[in-house]
Image 1: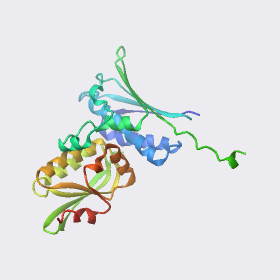
Image 2: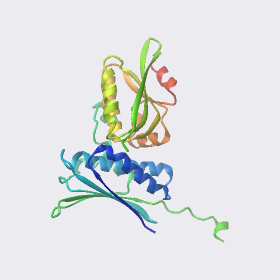
Image 3: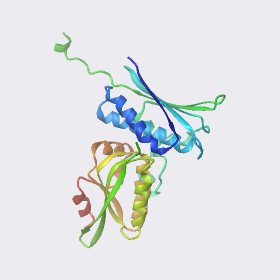
Image 4: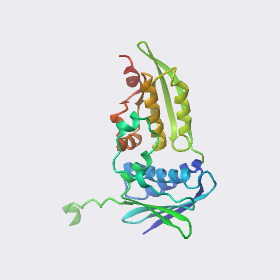
Amino acid sequence: MTVRRSVSIANDSSQLSSVRGLVKDLLETSPFDSTWRNKIVVAVDEALANVVEHAYEGDRGEIQILLELDHSRLQVVIRDSGVKFNPGDRLQSEIDIHEHIRKGLKGGLGMFLMQQIMDEVRFTQDAQHCVNELVMVKRLPPPEPQSQSESE
Amino acid sequence: MPTQFSISDSVRQAGDARVRVLSLKGQLDAHTFPVLQSALEAITDMEPRVVLEFSGLDYISSAGLGVLSKMTKEFREREGDIRLAALPDKIRNIMDLLGFSQVIQVHGTVDDAVATYTS
C-alpha cells in the first residue's frame, strides 16, 4: 500500500513547523524507529528551509511538498518555481566541524545533514516550465529475520 | 501553527566567574534562530561564559546549530565559551551527525556545566 500526502505552502519560514508535523505524522505509520523518524524530519526541514530562503529571492512564491511512503521507501519531492538552484559546492560528503566553529561559520550544515540522513538526494530542473524539483529517498530498513521457531 | 520558541535567563556563580544560563524551550529552526542569536549577541561582551540548557528543546535544525557555531567563536575570542547541558536524545543524535560534541562541551546537567567554569 502506498500512502501519499501533499501540501503547498508559501515561502515563509513560519510554515516549516506545520510541514514537520505532516512528515512526523506520516512516519508514525512507518517501520522507521523514533531515531530515524526524527532524523528524516530534520532532512525534510533542511531541504524545505533552503527552498524557502533561496528560491524566490525575497519575492512571494509557492512550494509544493509531496510525500510518498510504501513498503520499501519514503520519497519526498519538493517543487518550486523560483530561480534555478545549483547545489554545486554545497554538496559535500564531509564536514570539518572544528574548522567550521573556529571560523564561526553559520551555513553549510543543512545540505550535509540531508546527505547524511537520506539515501538519495537529487536536484533537477524543468527549464521549459521553470520548475525546480528536489527528490529525496530514504529506504526502509529490511524486516527483522524471523527466528526458526517462529518460521516453522 | 507558528513555531514556538522561548528563552529564560538566569545568572549563576562558579567560583569567581559569573555564568549566564539560558534555558531554551520549543523548536529552534530557520524561523526562530534569530531569537537565540539576538539573546547571545546581547551578552557577548559582558557575560562571555554561557551555559545553554536544552532539556526543554523539542527540535533543532542547522539554523540553530549555525548560531552555536558562530557564537561559540565570538565567546571564545572573549575568553568565554558556550557549553551545553541536558540534551534530549533526539537533539544529541542530530548534533552527533555533525560532530558538535567534539568541539563544544556537553554536560548532563546545568550544575555540571556551570561547575566547569570554576577553574
